[in-house]
Amino acid sequence: MENIFDLLKARGLVAQSTDEGGVQKLLGSEKVTFYIGFDATADSLHVGHFLQLIVMRHLQKAGHKPIILLGGGTTMIGDPTGKSDMRKMMTKEEIGHNAECFRRQMSKFIAFEDSENAGDNGAIVVNNADWLLDINYMEFLRDIGVCFSVNKMLATDAFKARWERGLSFMELNYMLLQSYDFLHLFRTLNCKMQFGGNDQWSNIISGVDLIRRKEGKEAYGLTFTLLTTREGVKMGKTEKGAVWLDPEKTPPYEFFQYWRNIEDASVKNCMRLLTDIPLADIDAVVENDGPSVNAAKERLAYELTALVHSRGEADKALAAAKSLFGAGSAHADMPTTQLPAEAVTEGGVPVLDLLVACGLAPSKAEGRRLVQQGGISIDDVKITDISQKIAGKDLEKGVIIKKGKKVFHKAML
RNA sequence: GGGAGAAUUCCCGAGGGGCCAAAGGGGGCAGACUGUAAAUCUGUUGCAAAUUGCUUCGAUGGUUCGAAUCCAUCUUCUCCCA
Image 1 (cartoon, protein in one colour):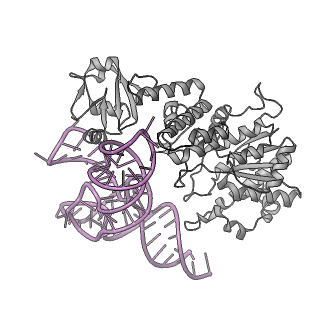
Image 2 (image 1 turned 135 degrees about the vertical axis):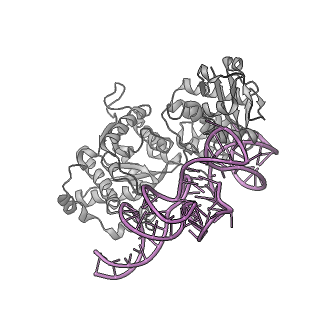
């Protein structure tokens, strides 16, 4: 069987590892228990978590056992890595709720131990609140604290970003806690590897160091490439915020469009990192520039939508996109707003009200601007007059509003 | 504990009694060019019943015909000395 490490490496997922030869040997020779930590700061996973899920999925398929560590305890502090501001603290209830939502979404990617289709390597979920909350401060300092050099910690990249704005003692401790998590899992569950985004590198190696010091045994760490745009900006953010995996927060059609609109330079990379499309195929698909990359983008968007939502949703999103951007604007599956009957006054619904009601403009002033700048079309007719009204009988059969070049919305009564 | 300073719109950052809904940049949105890409150029970017009105410059009170701007108290942050 192919060594999973080689696969990850070939797909460009691996950024750094503590001991490449060791990791490769380990993953090729035994069933390894590994963990990835998730901060439970929101009630849905988003595209930023995508890679972690993909890697877990790859590893589980190869027979390894994932531990999902939910940061119920550490989220109470907040990882300062790469953040320029201190995070606000969260309550236990919020964290618990978020953890539950994560678990539900993750089940699309990996099999949990208690689900029927899991083999002997079903994923388990742990919450570091279970051991961190009861820590005795004195014991912790004497036992774990001694193993850390502040000088060394401050020299790491993780803290450099915070150097100018100041760093509270609480945040400084994040690294110790994450390292302790690894040690704890190593001891109790024989977890030998930790994975994480490349920004977690310092936290991960400090855990590996801690295990070496306390247990005298070797543990491994591996980080994967961060998904960034060509400019180095983290992917997964749009003007509306993160692209979520929860269909309630980011509808499948929007999710599809996010990938469909990705910049040319990222297509190949995203295919390699995020999909199961064989490498040889990727090269073939994306070989030439020019308009043909559009086919590749479509495939990327389709595959990812199918993975996160379902084949059915992906089909619908693809069909909707094709009909909207193609010649005919048959309304397939697109965001739709049902207007209340009383919205129609004599002569119809004013365009500006319509735009606001559909969420296409946050305010009427914004709607006015859109119209004045020629950004709004309804049923393929450009709206030029801000006082125009849409007749009730048109709304009854439904109208398609186009904002800019690629936002489509259907409004009906 | 003592002293000095800071807080402005989505972000950075000017503005130090009326000419301020507040310069400039970033970001966003729209238009042109394109390929549902990138780059570039142009417009725009508090809200509304829009030649006007209303809310907004950390919070609360005050001075004044008039306060982002002056005064008092408070909150938070930064720096210096212990």
